[in-house]
Amino acid sequence: MRKGMGKPINRAVAAALTVGAAGTAAVMGARAFRAGPVAAAPGAGFAGEGSAGEVSTGVAAGIGTDHAQPAADRLSELITFRTVFSSARDQIELEQFTGFIEALERLYPGVHAALSREFVNGHAMLFKWAGTGSNPAARPTVLMAHYDVVPVDTRDDWTHPGFSGHHKDGYVWGRGALDDKGALVVIMGAIESLLQEGFAPEHDLYLSFGNNEETAGDSAAAAVALLAKRGVKPWLVLDEGGAVALDAFPGLKAPAAVIGVAEKGILDLELLTRGAGGHASTPPRMGATARLAQAIVALEETPFPASMPGPVAEMMRRIGLNSGFALRLVTENMWAFKALLTQVFGLVGDETRALTRTTVAVTMLEGSKASNVLASTARANANIRIAVGESVDSVVERVRSIIDDPSVELTVRSGHNPSPVSAFDNEQFALLTRAVAESYPDAVVTPYIQTGATDSRHFTKICPAVYRFSPLLMDAGDRASLHAVNERVRISSLGAGVVFYRELLQGLN
Image 1: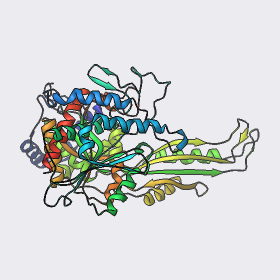
Image 2: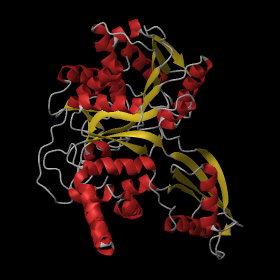
Image 3: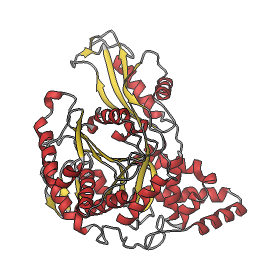
Image 4: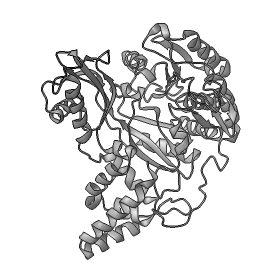
């Protein structure tokens, strides 16, 4: 979330109260006053309210210290494997994937001795920790991560080489540190440590580690098909997604543990226009490239309508409960401010806007092959992230309506609908909340909508309780390093992450 969100919301609050009746405003104020804050961090305010104070996170409190350095050392080695998947099989360094798998077996001998392991779709791994209870298959859980990574551009100026796994300044640096080898390491570390203590789960536990998530590959779907064939119906699925975010919301001094309860759909839509071609010295009016440009401008100038789905409204309510009075006034009176707050989300910045609407980004353009030749065809790819409540079909029809030009051909290259929304008032979400409380005691736990795609979307076919959360602490700089230069993870948060999964696994019993 953008830091500049506070002032627009404060102005919106002031404007709304000016318009509203005095009596109504008094009732709203009373509701906000009674509501909280319930667990605000020291000095929590909103848009300048209150005084700044240090936040005591689990990391600052030393939670997981015993697990932190071992996790960092293991992650450092695993980052050195260039596990970059590609749709072109001849471009994949298969020995890097094999080396990663062999290193994992050496680094976590207890896990590999106690759990069964099988390979899915080549190099994806599916582990099973058989439950010891009277009915172990009754409430199985699936913990997920992926170990493939996006490439490192050698032209980029990394502080430490992208596949070095370098330790420096309290971080492990390198591609995959956050996305998603860090999450895999804390899962494995938690299980390894519990095995050493003699712990055994009552219910079956599965670990699904993907090898091609970054290319939207099919390994996770293959794992789902395999489990479905065996009659496995998970009680809980947890994958990457949200994180323990610092400075994510204005006025909230405590970290926000945002747990994805759904994810947006993705659509790659090709826009194609045709023309006669010919010599560029005699261009026609509104040729193929001009009509394509006109269509792109129409999409840019006509955004999809905004809305605030239930998880985002609940997220704002929980943030408000732990923030200053101004935001709490809004979030405790959503019946009055929901429409206004939705508009503010669209104005504040890219991240907030993405939470409340379907977004369109034109990512690829193609025209003529020569500078003096008219394009006989011009095409663009629109990468569209579909909001909860819409579908591939409804989005294509809206795009067609916005462009309003029958000569622009639309072709769906790939796409899937948004995932179903998992509940955030159930036993599963409560268990995740307790695990966060043990690892990051001051964090505000809240549901949210995941704007990117994860492998977990495939598991919604066999499980109604699918969540997206990595128990790693990230500030704005850390989050900005995802898929970018200088990806890194805090060593201290790796220890807290192990504590999170230990608590989760013990809570499953």
